[in-house]
Image 1 (cartoon, one colour):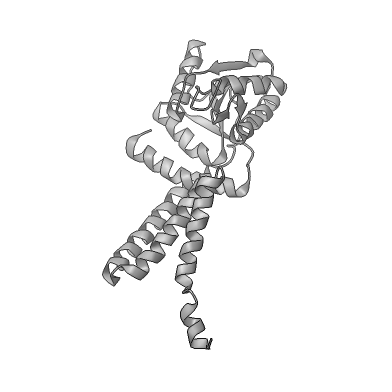
Image 2 (cartoon, rainbow, N blue to C red; image 1 turned 60 degrees about the vertical axis):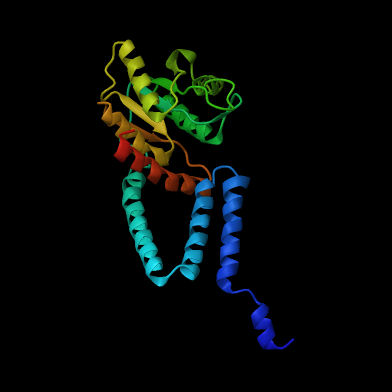
Length: 249
């Protein structure tokens, strides 16, 4: 076989890249947990390659322009997310709200364990604070998230008398609203008296939601998990913040 025939049989680089990106997209989206947005990114890049090769040049230029605008918007949204991805200065408050995350059966997910570790460290540092664990029972969960959090904190040295349980909420908005109502039922005003512990990428949105409910709160960043997983959630959070800005929740 001469060199010309070998070149004809060799797959063009764009086809190889498309196939590889598609395979990676399937792997990240369906084969592993916590990498879904890496999968979506791979699918999107593969679609751009196909669009570049099969669509008319005028249509491709429009798609490329929209993609650049979308990327610019994404960078703008990520600025406040990243700036708030840390514990605020002087975070001691009478109440600490722990926002729920997935529970597998009756066991906290890794994300939720990280939040609970942040809550435990906070409570040990500020022994006068009361913690509110907030979260209802979702699909695949045999106990409310709040109950799983309550049990974890007790097993890790936090006295039951310092823990209030809110076992109904199914969203961050409800986590905050029901927790604020619980604080008011104890005769206190949540405004200025609340710290929120959550994953670092989630703090900007959580504090913004609290502000929409008339409560100024400080953020407490949970310990980081695996870097690639955290980056996945930072990507996802841009869509969550957009939804907040558009719909207010």
